[in-house]
Amino acid sequence: MGQRTAGPERGPVAVLLSPRPAALAAARRAGAHTVVVAPGPPVPSDREGAERRVRVDWRDHRRLVEVLGRLEEVRDGRAAVFGLSAAAALSAARANEALGLPGTPVDAVTALMDKAALRARTNAALHPGRPVSFARCGRASLIPFLAGLIGYPCVVKPRAGSDGEGVRLVRDAAEARRAVRDYPEVTDLLVEEKLEGPELAVAALSEDGRHRILGWARRLTGPGLTATGHELPVALDPATAAAVRALVRGVLDLSGHRDGPSHTEVVLTSRGPRLVEAHARPGGDEVVRLLRLAHGTDVLALALAAGLGLPAPARVPRAAHAGLRYVDFAPGRRLEGVRPGLAAARAVPGVVRVQLQVPLDATVSRAPSGALHHAYVLATGRTPGSLARTLDRAAGLLGQGPPGLRTRQPETGFA
Image (cartoon, rainbow, N blue to C red):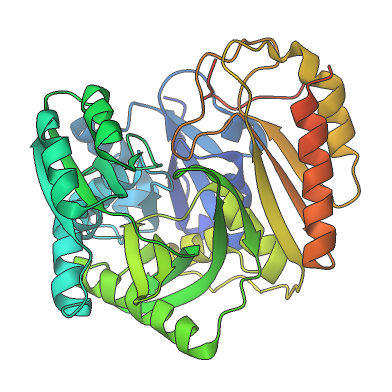
């Protein structure tokens, strides 16, 4: 498997399950050594400074525990396993518990994954007078009936989903009937009221039951539930800010989440902040990058340092406007023509990153869904207006589709 052991002088080790390159860079900023666990051929993180690699499918719990149990750092208790994505969070928690390592409890991860139970707990404990209406749905054919009970517009989503997959906005009875075809007949869904108001993505870090709110970003939406981007900073009046913090801390307490990072989505309704969903992991790479650009808050490095008992990395204060704009293409479009637009978008002053999520020689095969988009532009600006102009210009250049330079692509995409 290629791993080598090391003496105790090496210090704490972050065992990372199929990490993105940003996680490896964050581990270096936190002062941690790294072991990358991933199946198959090398992943981009290997090229970003991974110190060691263990080739094993971490979804196989027995095999993962067996392999990690051989590492000297694990046997000495100088390591912790981190799953910083939706797919890996539960596997990391299960491995830490089996190996006696620190981390988010399995029960907390699963409690946050169960949207129905979490909604019921949140309604009863935090909003007894003005709960969010919802119903469990075990058969797709019941969607129209339950949607009629909840009222339109409403949202249909998997009870234990992530990244917006399988989430549908239902505006009327006709859309409810069409939604039946989107799911297996025997299924496990929630049908709940559509929460109206500005949306926030809230990053927090818990240590021994104390929940520190690291920051939040505004989630921008287009028609339906589709995200068009994010922006920071988000100015809230003191009462609203306090209510958001109280809601997030209350949700984490209800789930038993005592240690580790979390990502909570909140809507600022006319009745006050209401939970959309929460996860026992950081938000996506784009959101954590925005927090670092705008506030100097290094969510990933803080989470890794806390999990390994290392000092919190020094914060580099920043005060900038940062934003992200998603760019999507019509299915059937070949992306070779995007190349000049890609180069031009990257050259726009203020642009920090332009990333395609599909290979440049591919044909787009599906529309964006959930949190999965074809491309994004990340930028900063001195004012909200200058930021908006930069994002508009760069996204427009990319969306126009003229050809550019080939860029390294991530492992996943839409082709």
